[in-house]
Amino acid sequence: MKLAVIGGSGLIGSTTAFMTAEKGVYEEIKLLGRRENRLKSHAMDMEHALMPFSDTKVTVGEAKDLSDCEVIFIAAASSEAGLVSREEGIAANFKIMSDIARDIKKYAPEAITLVVTNPIDAFNYYLYKEIGGERGKRLGFGANDSLRFKWAVAKKFSLEFNKLYGFCIGEHGSTQVPLFSSLKYEGKPLNISEETKKEMKQMLLNWFDEFIGLKSQRSSGWTSAVLASDILSAIATDSGEVIACSIPLCGEYGESEASAGLPVSLSKNGATPLLLPITDEEKTAFSDSVSNIKRQIKLIFED
Image (cartoon, rainbow, N blue to C red; front, side, top):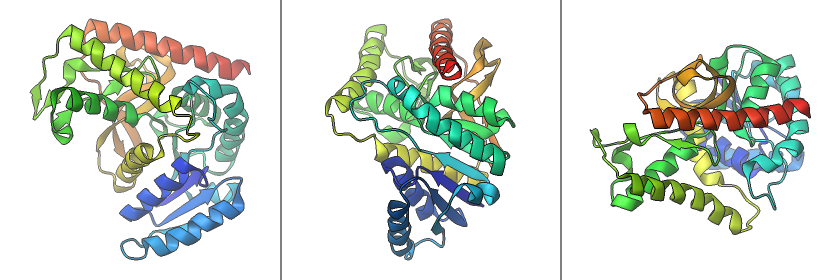
């Protein structure tokens, strides 16, 4: 199986490429992007770094080389320097995404795509409409939200992170919906007061504000790479592993005509949504989140 990484010279693209190559589940990973010499330097460096533990070949390619790739990871984006929300990059990223959609439709319309370009949900729906194909093959990266939800719980209650089970659904952004109703520790439900739920939701928002406030001119590349490589590996190994991804909606919790985060089972054929029982309050919050995503989608198609 072959993987293409569009935007392979950037932080998220290069770190995801390396962490996925490290697992050795792809025959070849092709790095695509506008900075050819940077791509070549990454490929040369990764060749040496991977020799002790992986046979995955890392190469540099161009649009036509997408034709034999079964999976495409899209990390290309404009600079996020100075932005205070994920939505602000929508206009600058539209031209990039429209070119990418054209190339994928031409060379690899049947490939599974995983997009990390912000706003992720809106651009994933854009790719779904522009490229076509099965909705389970059009995925947006949003697993960080679920990870940070569990991080907040573990930190608040001094629990072991890896014993927690929980997901965020909805937008990869400020309207994300932490599912407290299905939160478990060591397989047992966690009962959390309403006051503490509000505090933890604020922790998730404060994290992003604090990160942006550092003005480091970088994204959360390491966290994204760890989880994106897990998603890409689950696809390549046909594992059925359940990870949160944005997926075009087809009636889930009463919503459609948008893409939003849900737990999905991953395989070589793409993703299948897993619907967890949710409370009426969580369903309302999910609908509100989808409404915000639809507003972003409208901005893209009106551009």
